Image 1 (cartoon, rainbow, N blue to C red):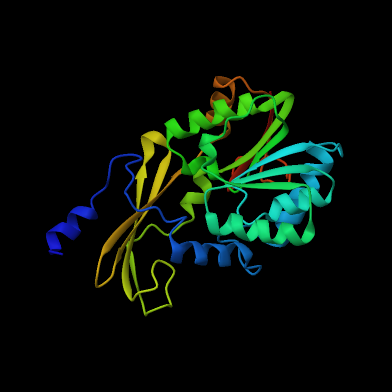
Image 2 (cartoon, rainbow, N blue to C red):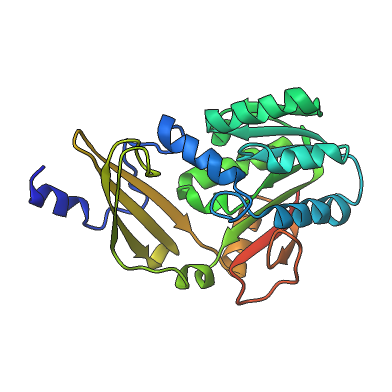
Amino acid sequence: MKINELLNLTEKPELFERTEHIFWDDSHISKGMLEAHLDTSWDGASRLPSTIEASVKWLSESVFENKKMKILDLGCGPGLYASRLAKLGHAVTGIDFSKRSIEYAKNINSEEKLNIEYIYQNYTMIDYENEFDAIILIYCDLGALTNDERDILLKKIYKALKPGGKFVFDTFTHEYRKKLDTKKIWEIEKENEGFWSEKPYLALNQNFHYPEEDTYLDQIIVITDEELKVYRIFDHVYSKDTLNNLIEKFGFKNQVFYSDITGKEFKDDSDTIAVVVMK
């Protein structure tokens, strides 16, 4: 590759301009993602076990009011929330677009024999109607979608809920993004030691901001001897006002805001916003 070609790739792309390289089902990257989900020492892919436990307790006791619910867990990963909810007596359907995570979750459930159905699917493709008492979308997944994908999903979530059903989700805020390092950085990894490839590689990491759309982009250019891949992870952040507008646009009501998915009291300077709405 010539240096000018590489320089062109480092230019700011159009908002929500994706590449052909999908990282969540890559055979190598998905292995690292699953390991990150299951790593109990940090919250890079899933939140810490103590936070997950607190979230499930709050959901079951305060949001679901200790009633046995039929729950749809979107972006369920390896089933960390689904299994805990099922152990409390809820019937859970978990959907995720990582085949490795779904296979792991199915294997665990074959041993635990809980009331869970795991489905390998892009959750923007769901097609249920008046099916679930509650739907959860946890760890700020909504912000990773394009606006069109988000709108399609919210319509489908509304349709999938029973009348009076609850949708619980969270998003990152500008406060969270302001704390992140926005410098251009590079990393070099030896064979079988890096996250982005099993081959030796150089990765160029950079961030872009689209202030008019409250959106950030983390772009990673991964270069090996054989190939170059570009991964783009968009993050649309929200405020209470923008979430209110979005919620009302799709017909949800009775929205209640919290600072996080454990139900802490809402504060304007929180890193996340958790929302409970009703159909």
